[in-house]
Length: 306
Length: 308
Image (cartoon, rainbow over the protein chains, first blue to last red):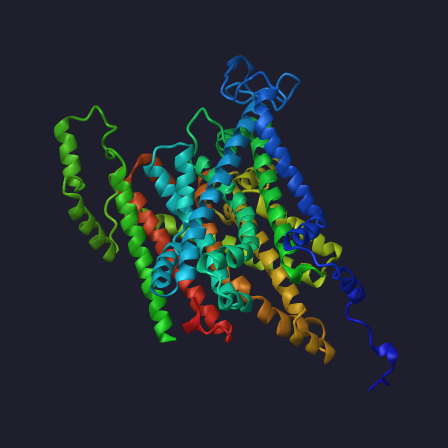
């Protein structure tokens, strides 16, 4: 065996000193999260992309004189030009106008579906977690059963039955989307209920609602925000899949999914820009929400901060 | 343990019952029936058709007949295809869909785990960044976008592989890839983060301190524990592959169940919609049940009876 001397040992983590220094100032959780989020360059890029997409969804359709549904067969299948910035499709519709009208619809569906998921999920998960006992048992049995179903299949079935339209798509997606959030909220509340500070608060005489709003909900907020951010690309993807199967928003409305689906034939005709723009922006949006969600999760998780 | 297995099986059966009832109710909420569109058909013929398919009976009787059919694995006749029953459609489509799905699952698991392991071992190195960029791209690009890209380059421009349809193994390459990339990316990220977590745990530090290195450390100490989260997501991942196959089979013109399912939706062919939905759900529920039971055995820390 080698002789042991000072050189044999070294610090496993060289930045131990540094970590201690940065931890001197106490931050609020919000500030702390923000601090770690801004250090994540990819997440910042994602945030900027999301902001730009929202801005373009608002002003984009107004930047050109064409509407998303104006057809002009004389100008069909034109490549991108000064006249038509993203070119025109098979029916001579301006792809720039359609892309940003599609952005409105895709983003609106994605965000609204997740918002409804959130409300229903918090209510059901919250009740199950707080009440416990029989209520919890029954609600969770129900959730377990629904959780086992293929969600997109249920959404597709609902869309077959319901009249196509924006509201029905959002409702059909929310019909199964709340399940994940409900499980998450319940788990968080069960965990937090056992915490010492909740018990201390109870001992000091705090009422049910005070504990709920002051202690339980603020502490579940982090994981819920992460789950939300990561659900938006899922919802946008689901909408695109529905549109792709012909169950999306009715014509002549455009969503990125319907545009991609309609543009599939261009693989054979060679007018690939018709396919490129909607496909590119779906991917870009999903990318942006994914990296922001990841960044938020890392920022909220002390274990990831090494 | 036995109690837990029984409980899980009951839940699975209940889920199947719920989906069967739900599909039946939903299908009957649709105004009209598959024959409403055929305007040129005389009233008497319509009546006979409805009688033939049992659509003239009260709903509750239709429901019980239908449920009895499911119990005996008989999903009835297809309405749009005169000669074939739903069972025949499923039997002819399932082998195709299964080949596609299993290939995609294997590609996703093998390459996803490899990518994740490489990324974790070379943590913060350039290999790590490349793997994670691939993973994020894989998560962001929807399968139908990816398949169009694949078709455009590998089938149309390079002419290496067939554009569509089904036949030899060469036909299976592009659709399997398109279906696998999303789950692959997901598994890669999960493997990476779970290995990184295990790497910093006390027992790995102890093993390193004791002088365990190289492949022995990775395979014996790290992977065994790091892979449990990966096993747990196999259920949701197969669900994703299953629903993803609707779109992929549609794009590539593959005669699998997914294609029949999408076709039956636009044809309003109720028995086929009902049959394929229940078949899909049954397969998925069974798969998730098996996975749940397996990882209870894999990880002795998980006390099945107390799990939720």
